[in-house]
Image (tube, rainbow, N blue to C red; front, side):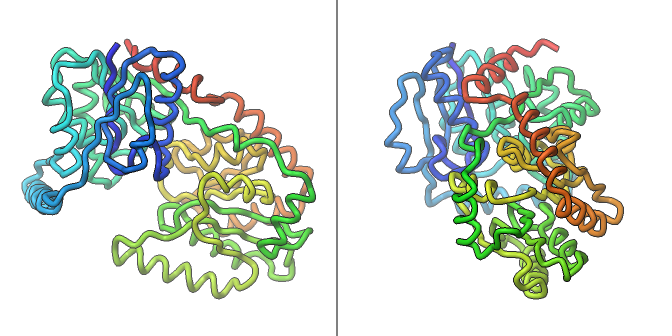
Length: 401
């Protein structure tokens, strides 16, 4: 069968520049090389490094960013602005333009559009007999103009099926009238498993100036309002200062796209200064190096303030056998083991309750170990490798109800 995979279009696939969705698509490509269920055309943005990849059963069709992308962006902004005024949405932008230009009409048996609703709308115009599926990785109808109620309902009405990354998303889609929805949970590679020796962990701790008896609560993610890094820092301000064994480790960078985000980072900078040596910031760390940081952590904290569609950090922590403190955001309670996590209501006294949860776990190593085991055991219920993941995707693309 001929399969077209339409990537989100922001980062290249294979995942030469990272990206969670891009990596998952790469796993599909790799698994298909072994099973040869499909002859795949992969639509992606160009990157010189993808020229080094030579697949037997996948052809890479890429678009290069061009000089006329800027005017396309201007036109897109104009149409979106006008659309908001007259309450008529548009899916036109330079990415959907390029994907539509490349797309081979009347050529495929199955088309899988990954997470970009604007590209879906463009490809839909060219669909005749092909089965068309949409893979939803994020929340929708939440203020994000890329995933509005109108665009979501269009996919519900016109697709052969929708694949989601959690039951949380499936249930929300069903409330909008969707009937053909399948859940395929994400998976993380086996490098997020096992543990280092005590000597290795101590060596890494010392590298970051942590003491042997420090209890480390780690945050991994962007330093923005949605992910709640500032809420964690506020919780650390509430923790008793005389207990200097409770330490925080913050992994991630901020991305400035708006003045609001800039102001938010200024808040984080101020909190950081007040906490001094109690919380250590180490910036961005490549994904392949995160296992060391999970290994030296006593607990992972996920204080998200928006609805998480899945939560890869949660699954990574589980595979590493770590307890988790998380907000009740989206799919996080669904993904985490009940006995492996403390779920904190983000709508009620969140900072105070987060601080209390940190103090409780800091005093009880037996509880932390028990929770870590529960999380590790539940991690085995998720896809364990790219072949299991690909098998579930294939099954989802035969959705009948």
